[in-house]
Length: 264
Image (cartoon, rainbow, N blue to C red; front, side, top):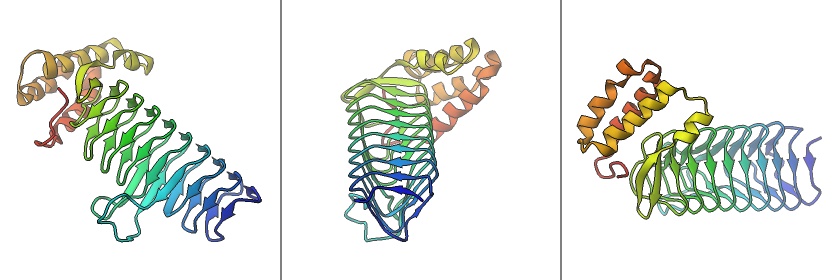
């Protein structure tokens, strides 16, 4: 039998693996699916077309799968999809997507999401991220793998944050953050690259040297963005191990919006 507290209200149509645990006074709607080993704490509301994977830890007082805070939303069958092995602490709010985008708000695997985090409609979160308390993401934000958001970080709608980037506490992001970049301020500006984080993740000396060279091209040598992109493309000739990192940076920069640009 599924381990459901006697005071929880779980719709008979909801699909819960027999190993799922549901705490007291939690409400789970009819279109919810929850995978093996996931635990849901007390006083949570999980509704809408929400799919939650395996071995997640969802603490008390969370709202997952509510309709988006978007006046254009008219009841379309949009979704929230959460992957495996995520930790979601207290008082988080994750909304479903909207038909104006992919229709899905998505959280990947192995993320550590602290209290009071808000993920608005159509947010896309990768894997292995850390969002500190009160991080607030507006609609359509995309966050790459291994990103760390400091407490009270606020991200404007449609902003992209590249893999391995990091924000300081109380950062306010109006522009895209390229991969590896560390930001701080209101509005946030680029301060350095996340070198210590890269070392902890096993980046060798060649790859770290290439990241330093990318930082120099983007922020220190007074190049135009086009000139910086051209220089970055040549880095694998000097640092062969950096080819995947350079390709990721090139792809990110190629997708920039002229209206937003990158943090400076």
